[in-house]
Length: 114
Image (tube, one colour):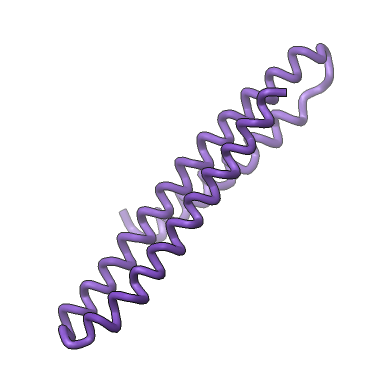
């Protein structure tokens, strides 16, 4: 699969993930109780997708960072100590974004229990 097709596929998925929650809130008000539970179920779906996409993006970013650091170390073994510290810092920052998406999904889950 080429990079162009991967990017177009990710753009389609991202667009769908943005539009699905907005469709949940665009319903006409027929029954207040029915609309409340329908929108809450879409919030749960959005929270699940947010965690999944964040975990996928985080693992892809971490794998690329580790691969680049290992390639740099293999080309110049004397610079291993200078490469390892920024790599670990970068991996921690990538992981913090994944944890932030988990916190946001957790808050969305709390909004469901209205």
